[in-house]
Every structure is written in C-alpha cells, then in structure tokens.
Length: 221
Image (cartoon, rainbow, N blue to C red; front, side, top):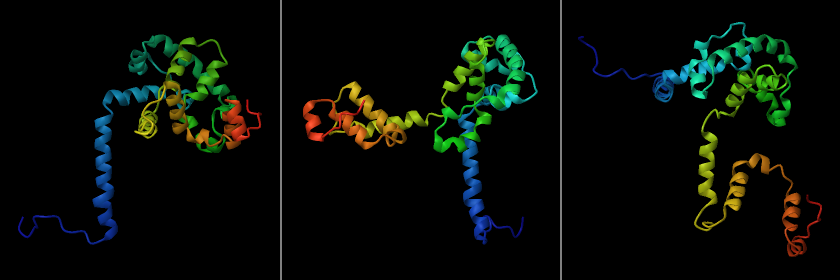
C-alpha cells in the first residue's frame, strides 16, 4: 500500500528489540531443532513411558494394549500381559508409594533436588515391584526403563575425556590403565571424595620400595 516502507520499522525500545531479535528467534530455532530430533513416534514413545512412572501409576486412569503398543514392540514384550499387570499393580502402588524410600540411591548433596524429580522417575515403582512377586513382566519392563539413558551426554562427555587422556605424551597404555584413567576423569565428583592420604597409602602398598619413598602407613585396604 502507499506510504508503507519496504522494510520493518526499527524497534526503538531496547527490551522489545531484545525480545524480537533474541528471545523469539531463539525459541523458533529451539522448536525447529526439537521437531527435527523428535518425530511423532518418539513423542508417542515418551507418552507411553509416562504410564509406568510414579505420576502415571498414581493416576486413576487404566491403560489398554494400544496405549503401550510402541514400547512393547521396542522391547519385544506382550502388551496384553504388561497392561494387565500394570493395571493390577497401580492400586497396590498407590497404597504403598508413601512407604517406599529411595533416599539411599541419591547423593546426599542432591537429595533435595532429586526429590522434585521422583514424580517422573521409574525408580520408586521399581523398588516397590522388587518387594512383590506378582508382576514379573512389569518388573522386566521397569528394569528396562531405568537402564535407558535419558540423554547421550554421558557418552559424549566420556569421548571428550578420551582426547585428554590419550595424548601424544601418553599414546601407549594397556586397557586396564586406560579404563582406570577414564573412570577417574569421568567421575570426578566421586574421585574428589577419596582422601589423598588413602590414595598415597594404597599406591605405596604396591611395593616395598614405594613404601619407603612415600612413607605409607600401611593401613590402606
């Protein structure tokens, strides 16, 4: 139309400009990446998995074989058996969920943070199933779910550590030594909790010469 500019008018407000140029654009990119990464089948798979979580089992709705068709095909399980056991286990779990304790499976410093994630977790239902012996197929299903990694970040992080461990100055080593170094590099939060004196004493026990050089106490197990 007459009087219109061929380009959008420049936004004068700084906050509005940041919203349009950064926030909305970032949301658009994120949504496109999610669409590329997760297909309709993936979303259906995640929706079926939710039926076996703490929240899914605490709900009053019952499941049908069609509700878990994809997940049973993936794991080669009988959908009818899984659904029957799931629907029978749900009321039992609802009555005992408050008595199931999984605090021993959480790190002390992250226990409070993990408490918020229990609703979407399969760990509590699995522990409840382990105390029963009436749902073998459902127990198998839950064991598979808790062993499936949420992301591939851990594997990718380990591969990046490999480049640090195996460099040109340390290019030849046996598998045992390489595996030990990889575990130490990947699990720093656990390794940092080991007292330095215990490490020195354990290393000193490898030989009498090291014992003399390091002055180990000989108390290491």
